[in-house]
Image 1 (cartoon, protein in one colour):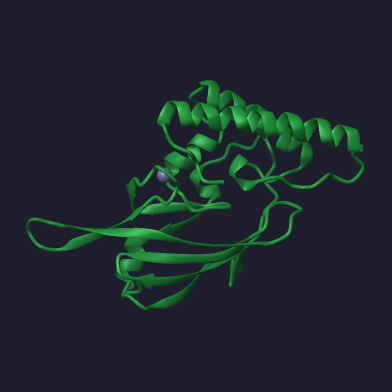
Image 2 (cartoon, helix red, strand yellow; image 1 turned 90 degrees about the horizontal axis):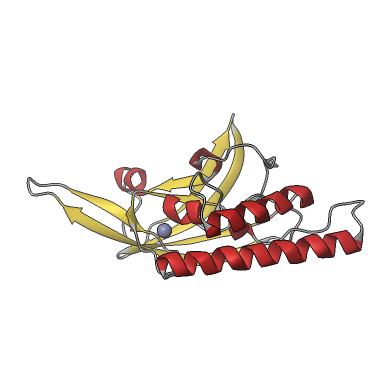
Length: 202
Ligand SMILES: [Zn+2]
């Protein structure tokens, strides 16, 4: 079982881009011939020769099963395993290419890349849960939640769940911030549901 830790402790305030997430690329997997049904492989990310994460992948007909462990800042490792559908489009002049269908509930966008955090999802789904230039109700709520995550030293991104109490922080303060965080997250998810009519799987 592979693992993805929150190895790099992201600082709140640093501009996050999709580079900050570990991506999987269906085109590359197709090119390397590892999407044949019944193939199992281990996929790793490295930075400067140091492994920063790994997942296990099992290819089946029309989908891959991702299995890995994820650890949010200060929390226990959690095992995750779920399928990601793969579709093939054929070109008129011959040839074909594969796409992932984003596994976030209600999304299903056809994409080449999925970005990991606690879950692998398309860029649009991650944008919904992370602050962006667009400022609407969900963005504002997400930004407020992120600010609190920064104070608590939690991994950025509301999809990454909750962390623990930082050393030296009073219980009462921690409880207050956690409650505020949860309220902002609820507001953000409610705004997402209203705007897009679907839930992001937590
Ligand atoms: Zn998506």
